[in-house]
Length: 382
Ligand SMILES: *Cc1c(COP(=O)(O)O)cnc(C)c1O
Image (cartoon, rainbow, N blue to C red):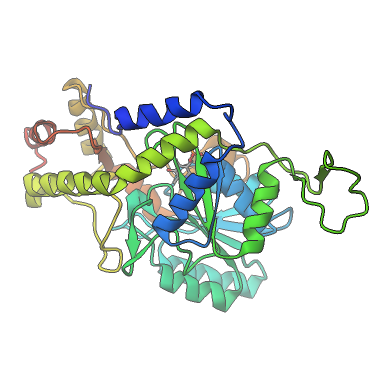
């Protein structure tokens, strides 16, 4: 079976993890801060807070931006449920902004329309979580302008976009946002098994996320009178255990060194797909500002839901595991209990009905791509 995504672990990756296992530090040692620095250097962020998953990072990002009961958080429906759940963890209300039919990213037009109405109704969001779908950055300059105008904060869910660029700068530098979140889940561009990171340029935000990552407990006392010895620690907030282990960080460091190679391989495979699929298929649109996608996913569009099912099943029969990204988040039974109904974001629903994610990962060979395309071309795709 050719999987749609697959980790790429080499001997260096394995050795890096084994090296950590031979030390006395399996957690809270020196490797996690090294990994944080490496990601910060890579994407020119100010600060990086490594955590156990992107889901944890999104939760901490919301908390650091003071999301709580009574807050409103808006996000894209074309994403994994975690982009919305983070707001629910904080007791906030979630709402969805429809997507651009061609990129699958949150539509700036839908956003500005929705903001005008919300501003009239007094229901403006406190935070917007944008999702760089498939690895292509959203229109961040326009989003930042609206954030300024309407006074909301921006979190970038860059789970698909480590290594992507926007306007020639790396995603993660937070030029147009408050916090950027990466995922190091096994299927993502850099794999730690599980893992995530929140990057930001404000040291106070980073400090708050660090504190919340580890039970809200600190050993730093400043001028605190309660400090009564070197053993003393203090819980200042209700935090969590969202720490990343040293093994995960070691794997992440080793993988990050291979990211430029991964990105290049992905671009080559994409070019091959694009050439072989020809003009019959609706290929993923690349906007000029987001010229440098990280290509986490390669999504083609079918004419309708029936055709999508047909090709999905044809691929399965040929031992090829395609996938579908994404079921609109608000279609999930949990979100239906909050009052969301079908038809709420029409473009996201149309996207879901016709999208087909073809396998794309660095262990895919050119022969595999040829085989996948030949299955598609044996139907009426081309
Ligand atoms: C994978 C993913 C997440 C969750 O990442 P984890 O590290 O598994 O918690 C969140 N948002 C998007 C868009 C994702 O693809």
